Length: 253
Image 1 (tube, rainbow, N blue to C red):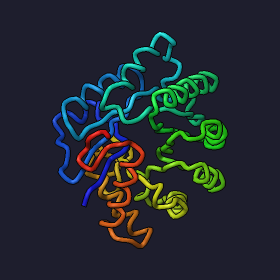
Image 2 (cartoon, helix red, strand yellow):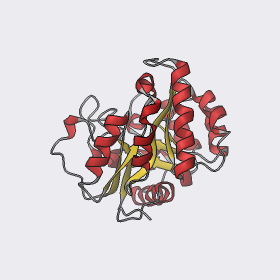
Image 3 (cartoon, rainbow, N blue to C red):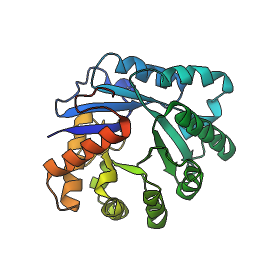
């Protein structure tokens, strides 16, 4: 059995000295701003099974300046950079203005096209606007990270060809919406993530979300879809291979 954690924030200091479990073929650690993205790159250089993403989280959008552009481009040329992200829109907390979030999101979608990389997209309370924007980027490999929006927008994103990464929320008691979302997603568009250090699955909710907990997410998803853990693990690992262009030993193609 093999699994891939497609979205985690290993640069968080809580992860110091935590080993990468053997059942994970590879892990992708996402950056949230330039400094964090550089740290993610440096971490990826220490372990053949760790890859990284570089981007500006919508919470950090107000901190982005054009002077950072060349630094991000250098990160995207690194042979262990698997994705542009974490990027997107978040209209729930508004730690950055909507205008700045949109500006930065468009910048990084353009960079993804330029560097031929997939994107990991955050879309809290902004799912319809994100869909409308992504519709202008045909051919871009999109991973909708931690999608919690409505079913109509979900179906539109599926029609657009997006992938969806499922995390520990699938195990929560108030997970009815997430269960319906998972049932709608074609299995060839399904991925797993921990989104650590956040959103640890039951029975570890409120604790540090460790990379190995992706197996709990896989088990719960297999139960919901009435399939085996081995089958859903195989499918999602192949999907990760397709999106992020890394083979089953964690090597970039």
